[in-house]
Amino acid sequence: MAAMTTTRHTRARNRKRRDAGEAGFTMVELLVVLAIIVLVASLAAPQVLRYLGSARSDAAIAQIKNIEGALDLFFIDNLRYPTSEEGLKALSEPSPELQDRWNGPYLKKADEIVDPWGRPYRYSADSDTVQISSLGRDGKEGGTGEDADISN
Image (cartoon, rainbow, N blue to C red):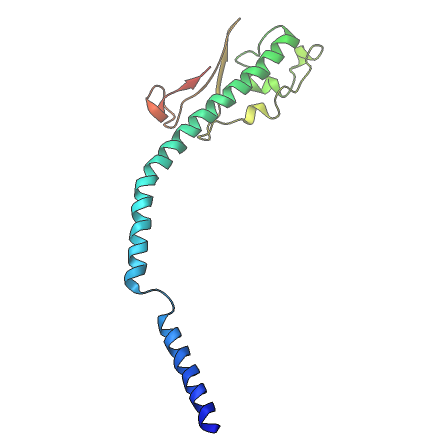
């Protein structure tokens, strides 16, 4: 019986050693998987970066439309748009001359709103029209693609 128990223990030890030797991945297998991941990432990265760039432009367009909506509400209450001197700040805080008609705030912290590239929106107004614009990624007038100016 003692010989039988010894044989069982020996077999169990041999099985554990064999299983331990087969567990895990070889270096070649890991390198192949890593190469596949790098290949897929190199194909997908340009698409993701292109999408990120257009997302910023789309966000700027949406923000400009929201500012336009607030300006329209300001116009309905005050019968005029904020002057270029008042700027977008007039959407958050009334000037002394507008105290009677002003029904805001139309936008919270409107003078602190920045475009997706971190620069404040440009605002100008004449008697009937307003212009809200962003200079795009490069921060310079003109440009194409992501560097193009965006305005209402």
